[in-house]
Amino acid sequence: MRKLIAMSVASLVCISLAVMSGLASEDTKNVFGNANMDEIIDEEDIEYVRGVIDGTNEVTELADANYDGEIDEEDIAQIELIIAGEETKLTLIDGAGRAVTVPKPIERVVLIGMLNEVKTLVQLGASDTIVATSTVVTGIYDEPGFSKYFDPLHKAAPELGDLPRIDYSAPNLEQIIALKPDIILSYGTYSDPDEIQMKTDIPTICIGDSTGGDLSLLQHRLIGILMGKEKEVNELSTYLDEKFDELRDVTSEISDDEKPKVLVVHMGGPESTKDIRTVMARYDPVEIAGGINVAEGCFGNPSSVVVSKEQILAWNPDIILLGSYPSKEHPYSVEDVLSDPDLQTLSAVKNESIYYTRGCRIGWDPATVAVEAFYFAKLFHPDKFADLDVEEVGNEILHRFYGVDGLYTEMAEKIGFHTF
Image 1 (cartoon, one colour):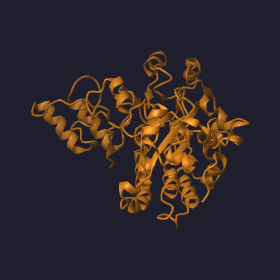
Image 2: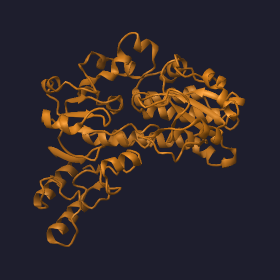
Image 3: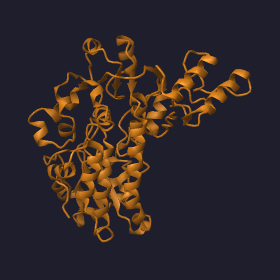
Image 4: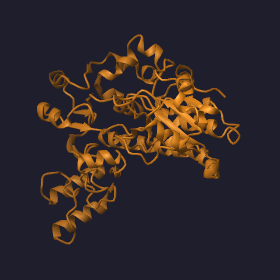
């Protein structure tokens, strides 16, 4: 018997997206059947629904397990099926705050988003369900893209390069219908999931906008629930926690005065200024590695924000990380920062403490974000992590997610990471 972990996704997207979606509380995005709202569907939910039917418990948003508008014995039957792992359909609230009912099991998936969902399906061992990708994979699988840029997919799932591709901004709905998918996975910014679902009559789930450097695996949990891969998600989460504990055992003893002030520059996305002014307000590896993100607390959409050079001068970071370009052909380089006359008073410029990082490019990948925690730890505190072999640990983590050896070595070389 399994317990379905229902998603508490208050932090799935930033505050700005939550407001835009009109979310009323921290518990509005969950699986229907989690009647008592405790994030686990189990026998206690059955008892809670009985109380609702008897009039002794209040109706909750998720008590209507079969999503038919009534609370009755059929909801108890649906919860029993979920607990047994035998449900034929499931209703959940997606990354855009929409209630979507999907068939179970899901065997055919069309992707019309960024790279988040395709990488998640590969990492969870469900790439065989993908029947079409979005056009964002072109730079990964087609020459001269895959030879120039770093991305794990061309080695971890080369077969996906031969699948049909759907334009993520203007998807061909007739093409999608012809593929007969069970569900469509979309991305919040570029397409309207309600319109696509209405016109195709195929359940369309928005996984939300990329959350940048968020390592909570909440998008993994959403897709894991859809695909019946909750166990795999939990195993990945436990693995990362154990790896990060190796760093936190050290960084937890470092005072804030000893931690470098770090600016993470974001070079990806249509709203990026393609210079130093677009910064990551959240990038979890910085904190894990014992640094202080100077932009923390700024709110962007979803996690990057444009600031002025005057603000950067006021922050005066000790280290600047230039992210989000997966090759050495950086449109905004270390040399550009060092030669900018407006930035000469920055500590990072004076000390030439400016480095490349992969960051978040065309979708967020917690696997590559996770390895950067170890890369940053060595950059931030070289004395305290003198024995840390970043390349070895990085290759181990990426192998755990993708099943391919040597990915960190390739990433470091192609992007131009600092060598120790």
